[in-house]
Image (cartoon, rainbow, N blue to C red; front, top):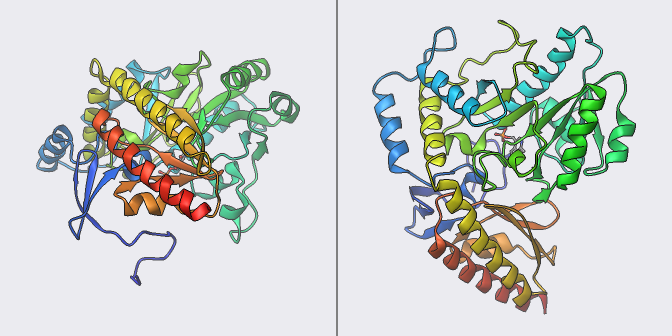
Length: 393
Ligand SMILES: Cc1ncc(COP(=O)(O)O)c(C=O)c1O
């Protein structure tokens, strides 16, 4: 499989040519149930009729004009995000990493605007993932990702995830904010203990720090609530989102309160493509759909069925699967054997999944799945477990 594409990814040798709801169809005609969803991106599945309609309509009107001019769909989307979150305003960009970068800048500028430019360091946590740009790599401090790219950018102090004592001890006169994923995605579907998120909020308030949630993966309905922070009463000041927001159309955003974004005056940040007509038209339709009566209730209901059946599966195959973790449709099965490529086995059987840290098989299907999709996935995972158990013997 040699192509002119830079070989930075370990790709499966499959090319998909069509998508229909929760299914992908490969060039050879094979049909796959998609519980990867472009790594938790295709929130409304593939080729959702409403998204196809709004995207096609917008494509024949205007695509891109830059942020030198007003963009009506961007304004509508910002209003919808603000009306349905803690935030007062949104900045639009094109990816998760850019959204996190934007959030880092907001946090630093907040203290600078308050007369404390020396408060610029961000506290972050081990096992986190915030993207592949130099600052987001430095925040996560994953040695594998940093290797060979020179010293990690300064300004980030990485701490044990979930340890309030370590968090308090790490705060200095230079600390600006605490950056945390409510559920670590790439790190292995590791939920923060709700008590820890409350502690993060309390510690931040005590020391005048900002709380910055990275909801790039958990946001936009993925966990059964629109935002994962709604599972606790610990609300952030700044939040990065992306992935599900465009349901496959690239878009990211940073949300913030007016107070947190007080330093973000004209000229302080920008993006040529960020929030253009096409991206924001699609994202606004995604959000409108997810906010319709019953949509999130359905995500919760179907995710309960999936979780329960996965737990039963773990019980039936204790030599292959250990336990289930996560929330809503962001679930991980902790696997027993490090040597088994269960993801490839599932793929051979027609189910797409994605791995995560700590030997976890991640299930992040489109939010539109129904019970029959769950049954189909469980049947395949059962077959995979039977094959895995034979290999293990
Ligand atoms: C929590 C989190 N933050 C940031 C990112 C980076 O997003 P992107 O790959 O769109 O830059 C990801 C991607 O997996 C993520 O899960």
